Length: 136
Image (cartoon, rainbow, N blue to C red; front, side, top):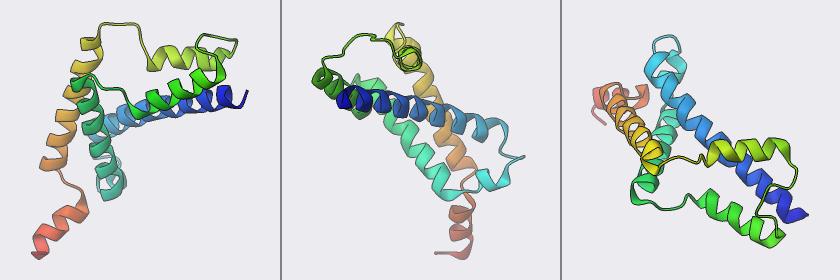
């Protein structure tokens, strides 16, 4: 039972990871002028950039996300590799692992990664801009 709960927690974390990548991208593109604290937040923007580039790398190279491997480990340990009644987790799992052609996930992920990188370069976080201005 513990492994089943741990597998459910990992799938939920995986879902949050995907939301972070999508929401971070939306904030950077559409709301950067209305949310200057976000647009200038070095740590958040850097974590988002590294996250999307890492995710793009995994998609492009067809490697598993570490969260997928951890979830699969817990599912195997719990002997629960199929839907067993956890309604919310079942549908979150369908969102995390959609039954589509891989390119349907790879292409948008790589595009989001490229746009995020370009935005980071063109409109770097305030901390980076300030360090260039002061010559550090």
